[in-house]
Amino acid sequence: ADYAARTRRSLGTTPKTYLDFVAAVNTEYTRLHDVIMERHGAVVRGLGRMADVQRGVADMQEELSKQQVVLKEAAIRQDELLLDIGLKTEAAQAKTAEVQAERNVIKQRADEIQQEKDEADEGLR
Image (cartoon, one colour):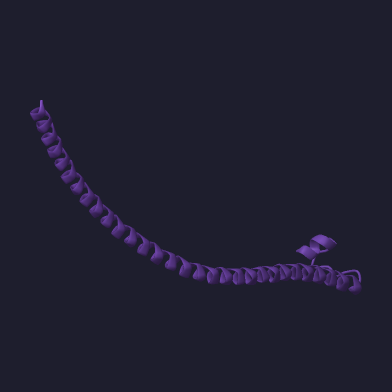
């Protein structure tokens, strides 16, 4: 059909010369070969890009595994720090309670002394 459209000859007719026929077949073969080679080149380029991407993915996976180790270590340090902060917070709260109790005792003692002073000042008048 393609041959008939380009040469304006039907398949039932014989080309004027055999050499015209061979030249037309050769031209068609060359055109198809060029198309196939172009597609082959595209496939080869695509495969090359896929190989590059695979290498990139492998490098990224290696970097990710290294980063995961660092992340795990950081998480462990964070847990230890939170535990340490929790213990120090409890100790600080205990110390605050102790200081508050001492403050209350001292305040009570100061109030008693102030009361004794007021009574002594009144007794001197």
